[in-house]
Image (cartoon, rainbow, N blue to C red; front, side, top):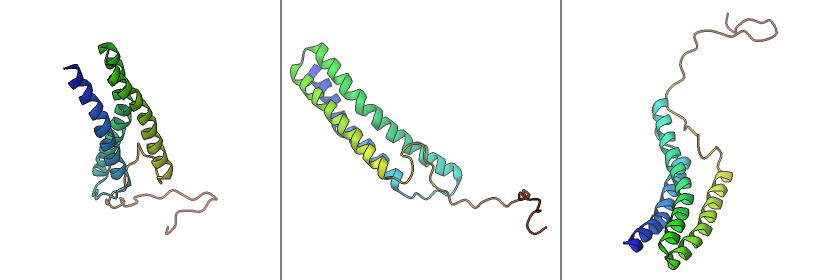
Length: 135
């Protein structure tokens, strides 16, 4: 049972974390159809959740596996999770490289929406004493 649990934890890190990060990065670089500002905010929040979960699990799963393998006395799994910590660093470097090439922030970005701007109901006078254009 120990080996099954540690194997599941390792495979979750090996395949699940890159999946979350790739899906999050694809969503960040895509141009979604968001007809309203609320839809754009929801799309951005889901993307942020995917990226944040991927980044947190990237560190948490190997550390948890290393701790559990040490407590269980499994030398083979300790080596696997020890090497996984090196993979964690590589994944962080890849995400940092993608973030440096992006035109906006990876987390906290809200895509543009298709909603028209509301009509202007008042005018703010321009500095220098002139009034509003058109009256």
